[in-house]
Amino acid sequence: MKNLLLLLLVLCWLPLAQAQTPTGSLTLKQAQPKAGQEVRFTYNPAGTVLEKAASVTALVYAYDQNKPKVHEIELKKVKAGWEGRFTPEPGVDGAVLLFREEETYDRNNGKGYPFYFYTAKKQPVQGAMYGLAAAYAEWGGMVGIENDGPKALDLLSQEAALYPAQKREMTQTRTYAQHFTYKGEEYKQKVLQELEDLSKEPNLTAKELGFLANYYNRLEKKDKVEAFAQQARALEPNGEFVQIQRLMEYYNTEDPAKKKELALAFVKEYPTHERVTSLLNGIALEYAEAGNWPEFDALLTKYPVVATSTLYNSAAWRLYEKGEDLAKAKALAQKGYELAQKEVQQPTEPKPDLYAATDWQKSREYTLGQVADTYGAILLKEGDKATAEKYLAEGYKYTRGNSPDITESYAEVLASGGNKAKAQKIMEEMVASGNGTAKVKGYLKDIYTQLQNADSGFEAYLAKVEAPAIEKLRTDLKRKMILESAPAFELRDLSGNVVSLASLKGKTVVVDFWATWCGPCVSSFPSMQQAVNKFKDNSKVAFVFVNSWESGKDKKKTASDFISKKNYSFQVLLDEENKMIDAYKVQGIPTKFILDANGNIRFKSVGFSGNSDKAVQEISMMIDLLRPEMLTSVK
Image (tube, rainbow, N blue to C red; front, side):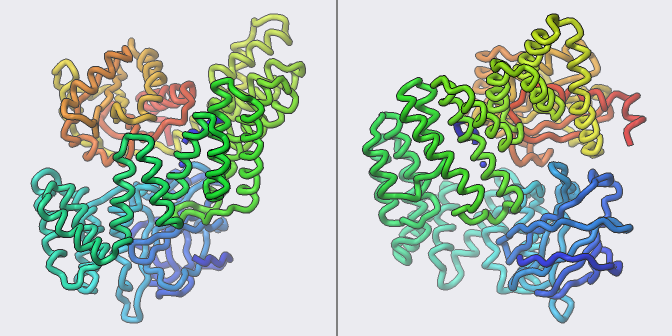
């Protein structure tokens, strides 16, 4: 399938003394653990989404100043909750813990469970408060920790008060925090003051000079930009600032020949840069698109770093979709499959700092599943159905049913095979595990009809097969239900009507934040239209699609033209100044909030899985769980 997209720990289990941290559910044996010493802790999930978890894993984001690394700890069940311990690497200043069971996380309402390491004088070590501020202003959003500008600024002030020399080091984090704290002219003035203060410091580094040039450019202070850019280039002619400028030139160039020239020049001068593989990948795919295989092979021979399973898979899939040169497509897919297998068994790339080891393993297996699906699809087109089924089965296995397209490909080949009993059993498992799309259920119906010689009774049969998936979804949603007061809003829709939170009181409201440039938002809209249609006659349910972070000068026209062209019957609210999306602390789109009749946020859903049926089913169940009579029974 084509690409869809993405500490030294010592484990043992010892009884812990009680020393409560401010967060409530995390208890440290030592309330103020010393830097470099082992940390022992207990996690009590009472009142959280993990209250009834059968197993719990701790994700420890241990940071050295503003640089985090994550590690996992499998916890042991004890009477007081769950126990674990770890020993940090030298230099670690503090940590933020998250807890999870499979895909269910306790993130402490987006704050995480943080703690510092302390000096012998019982003060947080240098970098402890700085690192936590960075979590709330920089890297935390990537792991589900909510941005909190005011909190980050407060932590940075405390750090500077205790360690004055840190103030200069923390400039970038402080600037990011101001983005989440102030808006408009106030934000601009705050940042300008930061830049002015930094510019007066002696012996500015190339990194600092580059930071000044970049931020003055954002604020359109052109006179300042070139002055600092020249200093940065003079100090380090081939440094980070110059490399970024070279990359920006590449990305802003539209002429293909010029882009290739810039990419190859960059690769030659900075062969170890993290973007090298990406740049070369683009060139290789251009050769593949043109069928220029001698140049394709020559590039991979000269730059082995680009010869990845992902590249081979993409090239093979393009040929497959065009129906051209299946022999070449097969050879490319086979090579990609072999490389993906090796990566699963023994990765050549280091684990990303914010990837837990199990997630990193799943990511590599997902890539293997994608290539296996491509290989299987090519074999199927060649007529080798038996071998194709083997690889399509691997595609489904390694993607864990998380790719609807791959799931459907495997179901299709099963349905067309001779072993109907086997096909029925596997598709029943797909549906029972929640991976049954409309197509899969359609194939299952065809098989049921053939085996029963009639389609009567299929609906009852399907309901029985699907019952485990529905019950699991219901249980998971009940666990994930929250209770937070929804921020008030008052926006106009595309017709100029004013819609407010107060005007929707008494209704269950689905709030969907989106923008026209957002691929996952656009992909989710057919399923959202299904959901809107399903509840269109229910006066107690409302859907509002909040257009935020929109690009272009005429945001209303951009949104209106898109909705009109697609013929969606959505009530679109225009958040042109991004006030509502900020109030709801959205960190990525699409993000949906489901509000109860009293204006409380009860569910939050981020992203789109690609499975339209599952999305509609999930929204429908959320709405059902928020009916007054259901709320009284939800524990």
